[in-house]
Image 1 (tube, helix red, strand yellow):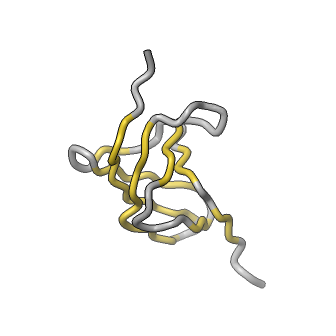
Image 2 (tube, rainbow, N blue to C red):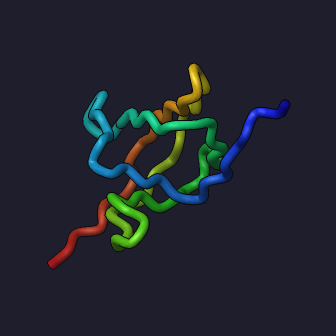
Length: 80
């Protein structure tokens, strides 16, 4: 029985991200997910929302059917 993996090409926070340092955030997602590391990807609050910024994922940890992302926000899109 294999481990179900989901490939993600954006970070969807649903407002659950935790700030670690000024530009560094941690986010825990359910299930095991693959993310591209160290390349710019969109950050969104929900899948339907416009991008709220761009991040570089620094670390991905899998544990107890969760994926923990540590990412650095490199640009922020401001809405008028």
